Image 1 (spheres, rainbow, N blue to C red):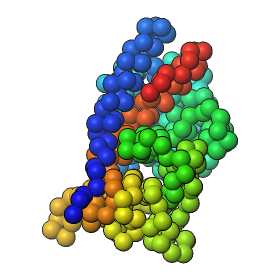
Image 2 (spheres, rainbow, N blue to C red; image 1 turned 135 degrees about the vertical axis):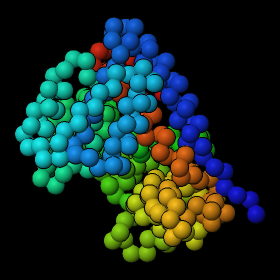
Image 3 (cartoon, rainbow, N blue to C red; image 1 turned 180 degrees about the horizontal axis):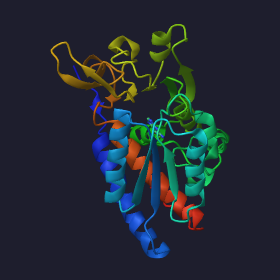
Length: 295
Ligand code: GUN
């Protein structure tokens, strides 16, 4: 039995990080300052805290100037909007990220819509969403951008391939579908209300799974030889009491059927922060009238 090729997100992200670090250094010389990435973190969700800490560390290592503003969980929406406005106006801030999820009393859309679209390194502002779907230059969400970079490591050309995205979130599923469509795939989005999701997935040459359900996708959901991108990062405690990180795909049996597959951890995860840093550098270049770097 041949096992699927493992798509090594760690090494692909490390390669991207080397290139973004070189671009950040060039920018620092031409701007006289490091590109600035500002995060706003409301409350104390532990998974978000870990992400924000890792992002700050990676951004500093890449030569960016990271800053994270920690705000209390009971902050008034207007005070959060005022903080975003301050960052919108701040010359030294090139990228702004509001960590999600937000507490329930804060309206997520109002907050996202308040971010300057040219600094929206998460690519969630409706202007960037519209640009993505209409093929215009904008800022592309980091995780699905990472998925496409991983696919390009094993496919020279995605044109004409049957792609299925399982999951329809604004952060991953929807932009992943847009990117695959822009790469000339035939794209289907399946989700929790889809009838026959397994059969839909089994048609896919390219399967991107982003549902947040540990091991939902078994080997019998996968077309032999397909490329499988597992976006899930599910932290669970095993019956033996061990902490584990599982993907949305049941990895070992799936690897016996797929042609190429990402591991969890070490697949999509490392790409997200590397792509966020790339977005910050792109935003900094555009804000200062420089051409886009080619990463
Ligand atoms: N929460 C989980 N993933 C993300 C992300 O990529 N960006 C933001 N802002 N929040 C998140």
